[in-house]
Length: 169
Image (cartoon, rainbow, N blue to C red):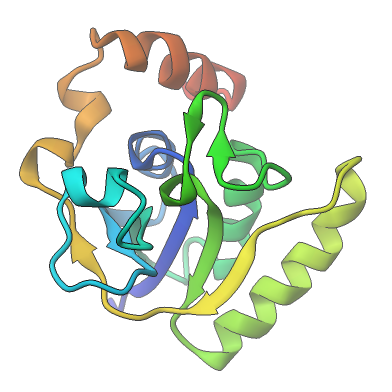
């Protein structure tokens, strides 16, 4: 089986990770950073807003089970792509909405998907569609965060309701 990669930013990576880990055909979800101008960023540095990186998830998926278009359908459903540099109370460029494409085909599908979904929102979509640069996995304590810390207040207040809304609870 050959896996395909997708890299997406839509607010806190814990939220995206928790959803994508529940979708059939997705084999691995790694929280990390991309889209910035410094090498080897860490959580503290990206939270300063000075590195230019976004919190992202990099997904390995079986495209025979779940298409890239379906991965994008979930992306649009799990965050608000109309808010610039924020998702809820998470504010800053590190929380921007972005699709970091791995190929021309992904770029084309992302543009098409964004155009198709735009009519479902009352405000313009601000999601960037840009080529993937360097991807840096986040620190170990950020990986599988919701699964390891469901009792965390952020998980209870933000992630659990999101999972319930998407029928994953």
